[in-house]
Length: 160
Image (tube, rainbow, N blue to C red; front, top):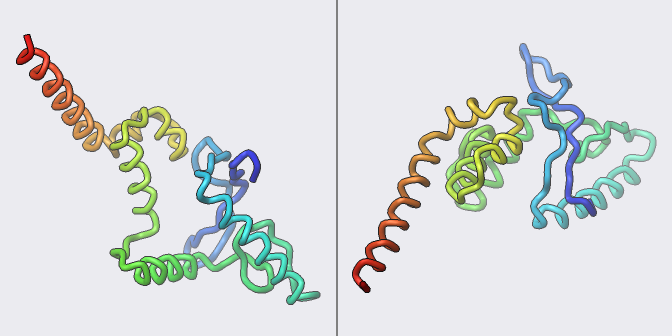
């Protein structure tokens, strides 16, 4: 928490109708956390300690940050159900969970974050993958930058 990092050691997904654990995709397993995520994760840690105490002997250690009341990993479909419920309660359009990842990358790219940094955050192994998926955002950002430069140069010429 103090370093604002998350170390992804495993992922849980459904394959062939069966929930299973696997190594995370991509080459990067350490993610930097925005400061706004630290307090909710600390709260979750306290919540989980209380659940562990209530569960007693029924608690199963799983090393997951988010678990059921007995410490078992959450069913992947239930993660999506929770995601859609939270989005709906917030008045947001419900999207696929994977689209939230695209949204993050789009916002970073539109904010002018270097494509190589976006690639590392997403865990892509090659910059070409990132650029192919988000090229339209980079082009929009470039157009905006050129328009900004045009406004600055036009003002300067008008003063002279």
